[in-house]
Image (cartoon, rainbow, N blue to C red):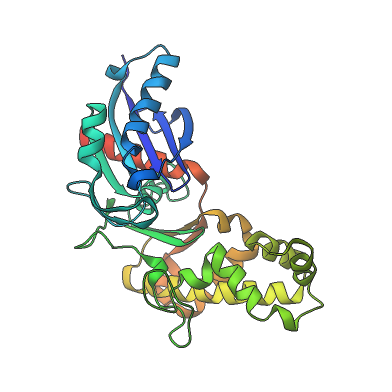
Length: 321
């Protein structure tokens, strides 16, 4: 009987779950709501219940599952699976690995969710074949993961790869939830793109974004991208600023690490070439020749599956390799 790997991607709204083969192919995937009540005390029990229900539906039992890999928000001690802090879940120094192991009776490995997404892209996505790569995820915030020699770089306190907190605006930057100002996250996330657009939109009544704001009471990062595709001058200006901040930050990352690939994922990456080409231009401007010629930028290909695939990879490497 072929054993399955289980991948879990824990988010503040939903928990994504999947059963995968040892080769990283998704066999079954589903999701359940994240119960953040009572400081997230029900989350690991909910994961076990969801797993058991799906196994019952498939006519299987837990003996089919080799182990569980899990990506969780916030810095993680990958050695013992303790979440240092996950503000949106109410966790601080929370023993996630221990709790999930006790609930499921299965071996468990835990890492930061951006790290597991990076691993997923290295194993089965845009970074396939690259053992030295960086993954940056552009969503509500900006996450990142650094892989060197095929291994995740953790850092002394689980905070390695926090690309979103590179200072991109050294003077008069926006405040970030991390406690400082000018972080890349404040200007290159979906939230940051909207923040940049609204900053001076009142002086651009000719922009379609002004019409959208008036009609809907708000605008989204997708609105900015769509308007840029339609040659809206102000939207193009905003996207150019975003491209500068991101290209400049990634150039500095590449100058230090010289990865084979930098993979850009998350919802904002769906902008595709209109974002990537601008980022590449600034990236090339700020990297030195050897890095410029050896490091490739690419858009992530796994979408929302990256996290569960990367989480399952941890099980594979610990129990099969």
